[in-house]
Length: 145
Image 1: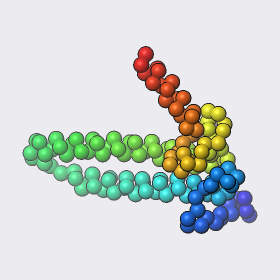
Image 2: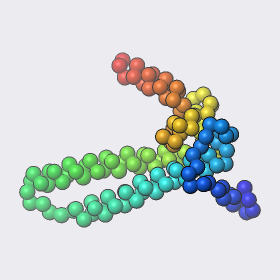
Image 3: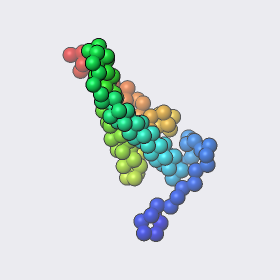
Image 4: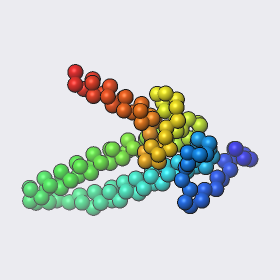
């Protein structure tokens, strides 16, 4: 932390990608993932506001019952999509909190580092690939009961 609790700006080259040969979750890696998460969240929020505007414009009286039913189906699908995105934003916020707390990138189950490849593909991951697979197998066993 710099003066007055301000965080020093971390320089990241445009083409920077986290690499296995550097210290795990060093300043550059955490800044890379912070920016990736913030960009993802910004993109979702932008998409959401566009959808809301579109839904407000679409609120009109449609006399044909088939067209109205089709519109209602589209709207229900859109609302389900928005709900999934709301949950995704909560996971992004949780990942950003873990970055601030110095816990980001470590498996919640084992405490071991999550692979950089997995984090790059799914920056909200909280489990290593092995722990995730174990979790999914346990879930499948319980679902089959």
